[in-house]
Length: 106
Image (cartoon, rainbow, N blue to C red; front, top):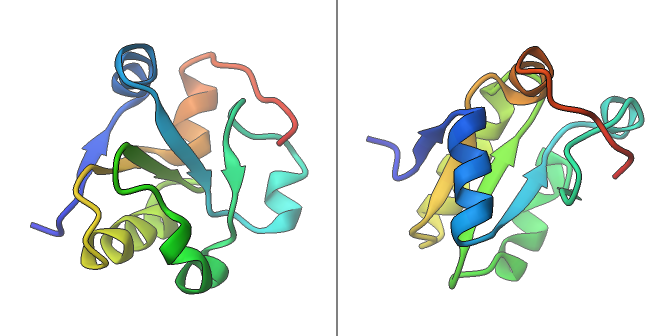
């Protein structure tokens, strides 16, 4: 496939509870200003190549965006750099909101 896995909101909850993960929001500054997932790190997609070396190789990394397209690109990029446990949040922040989860400032 693309070297990464898709994860839904419930799967993300389980992953966080079991092992923890690095959650990365790849949306634009304007999108992030409307709120995100608590604990996420904001790293706009266009800056990912400059920060790839800072991604942890020893824990899961979950990317999300507005609907899942840009975060799939980020996930594929991270996997191509050798990260093993990489996930794309299905539906992005919109899926998060539809599931009734809250937004927070990040």
